[in-house]
Length: 254
Image (cartoon, rainbow, N blue to C red; front, side):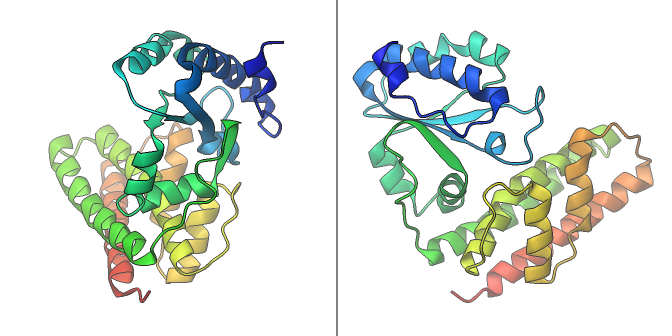
């Protein structure tokens, strides 16, 4: 057995992604050599939101340094990655992680909550975050979501299918933000919980009706025909929910 395979820690990965992740990791360790510090699986493949055959597997690679050669090596794997439902990995360096905790607290916190390092040292478990930085990012992201919703609706020219996709995307992006908001309130978060569980828990904690987010989240896996007035009502409801969350974060005391 190759030495790199001996070093892989795949125990605990769901059966559906085990072989694809192992094959990808074998290629990475062979191509990147000592420049590769760690491989970490993140996202829905580790939670109950995973849908076999439909959900992609997401990874974070920590490299000693980012070089054009390393980018080329990973780019050459794109075709095989796509066949195995592996998204293009996020590439980082230890310095980037350390210097970005204040700017990307939501993202790194989400990685910390839901991840499995299968090669090298775990880059996320020991990270700490300043609550003031995370609260500010939550506020900024919610207000940016409102802008994207407005601009998206205009660009979609009110076409039902496009507005539907905008609402699905917005809801998906709000889930890690809601986890961060719960973290700010020192609430326990189930690492394997579905997105719906997070939305429901946040709705109770912050006294905000999030039924519109639950509906939009379910549309990702449902083929339903929506009338124009249904889409319009859904858009208005999601927009109002995001406005209310922005008000909650703005008043949140840290």
